[in-house]
Image 1 (tube, rainbow, N blue to C red):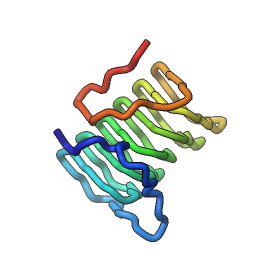
Image 2: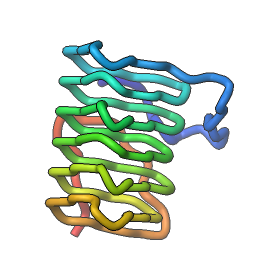
Image 3: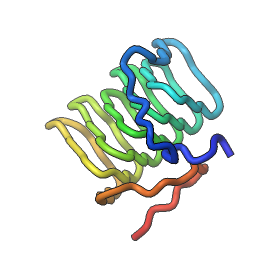
Image 4: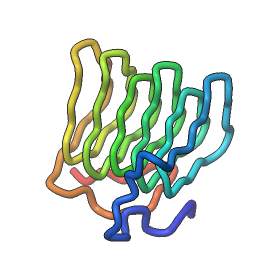
Length: 135
């Protein structure tokens, strides 16, 4: 278990003053868990769990699953995405994997391969190697 109920608190941690920056050229092998926002321009080979906002920059890539409150993707993602609130796929985004979110914005030019489930409220769940999607 990476962390207890990621969305269990009533407090939204989307502070722009607290951000973890993973710069281009950095590679993380293993799971990443954060209570603050993440700006990823490097590469993560593992699951990412964030109680705030995740921004994957144009040179950023996640090879694993992503669970967060809000996400903005300019880079690449190969895995499942569970976003509690808003997911934004920018025109340079390249996504391979299923999406579960409440709100979705896709810019022209973004690439998405997988299924998308949209619902009024994404259920509270723990990050697993393979998140379960209700059908």
